[in-house]
Image 1 (tube, rainbow, N blue to C red):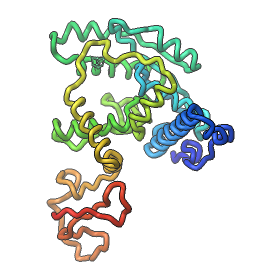
Image 2: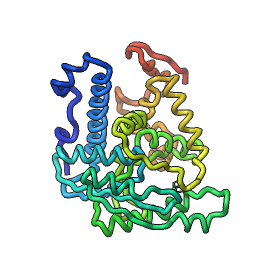
Image 3: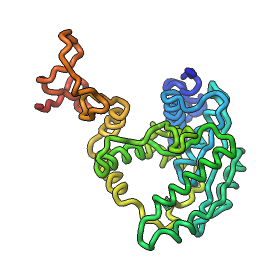
Image 4: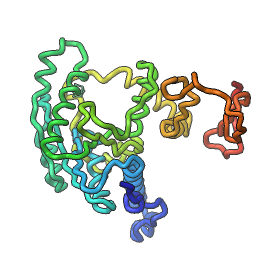
Length: 320
Ligand code: SF4
């Protein structure tokens, strides 16, 4: 089904509400409000764009929104609710939280928040914490068994609720981090897909926040004052490799403006004939066609790239 883009994605040029625009210059508080209003529009536009680009949500879908109590999943639910009101297709949302019985998990927080927001929800109580603690020796990382158990439970819950899509809150920076982790430590050119079929073949998993930058989510979450539940309750150590890659990307973002955006665009612009995977491109069977092609590969020329932040006339040259 081809979806219209008009209602999912509001154009950038829509004017601010008259009250906001008139009062913007009046003081710092209103200026901040305006920034948040712009951020909300940007978040809605990017989530709407991802939904359209990857055909994530269709007419009649029941979307199971996985909510952990972290900023990303709160924001995902928030933005999907806003889009639901104006989307060109009708779809349901149901928030699901898996209470893994980690010590100190504040079990009243999510039901209270979700009730106040008027979102249908389901809390699944499963003590995976005890299972993981019993099976994994002290000092070893808990995450791989924990996430395997969580995955199985969420698939079962999706079946029981009749959900047609499972939505996860991963964002642009999660995708880039995963891409580099796979390249640095896994020997694969592989990121994190915006939409996929689950490993049991029975569910479609979507990542509506795939185009959203984490820095926007941090500011949005602070503004919306989500009741954040810390993700360290299980006592597991943060993955050191992911931490290093995140720090590398933050450093690039600080010192090389535009690099993160360019890398993210690259993930949507793959040229298999210019990589080295023989299963993606038939290098062995390649023969000259004899037909000139103005857009064809020039092979001997040096590549030219626009310099970030400068007019496109400026180029840096790299000899091949
Ligand atoms: S950080 Fe804790 S809750 Fe999260 S996957 Fe790892 S063990 Fe599970």
